[in-house]
Length: 393
Image (cartoon, rainbow, N blue to C red; front, top):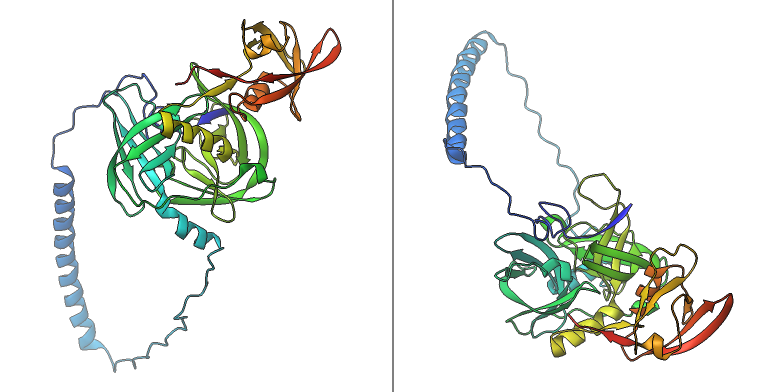
């Protein structure tokens, strides 16, 4: 099983449909010259007309022969009308899924990205009435400097968008449109979720905008890595069985009250099955983390990533995260940690491997104090360090 960012593509792993980053443009065959679709339809129409005239003439002649030899006509039986309800057979409250979706859809957008070498699409949602929209970094992170971003609202309105800033580590980006009085979505609290809570996903899978799927929260604090080498995001993910497919990237995951609890970002796929689709394992970035990143990008154009100032030993296979190197002067160095220490707990969270340590750290912000529990020489110790800042994107 593999985890892929939900960016549908003409080649895998970019917004639906899209080409992979840095891939050459597809070679398109020369168009075949011929009658074309209109001429084909016209020829088919003329053929049908000729056939119809012949069939009609034959039917008329046969009918005349039958009528001359037939007896009295059979009596005509009157049609019996069927009963049909004239009212709404399913009244919907504002708290129903239909009611929630009706209220939220105007805040959800489709995002089309076109470049000279690649193109794709994804989803997003309105953060503020003055035109700020949140989406995934992998939806808009094309190498083409001349890329064109088009934001499509639920009523079909299309406007130009520009990237305000992004953070690859969190796979988040903010874009801006020159619009005002937009319907901003309501943010919820991802820390208050419980497994089994309702979850509603809205987006544009495979370019089908306004698609709604429904399920539950399947798991919390799921360590997920998504992306390609050199562009990997670490997500302390909300897992859901609400169907999520390529193109849902950047769209909202909602709770039963219509509040955003996550940003749909990745799906698990079966290796070797071609381009991935939903197998009931979708992952969303918790909204509490997304909110901090979005606020920083809107304010400064970039967002910070917290670090403890170490390089981890990825060859270590036992429980915990083993420190490979200590960054001189970094938070761990100041806290007295050394190479070879094995971190087994951060706050109240047990650390099983290196990936879990990274996603656990990224639930905090730079400057936050965190308690690390670690093993050294068979002895378990504890230290409090203040998180540092990685270079902002």
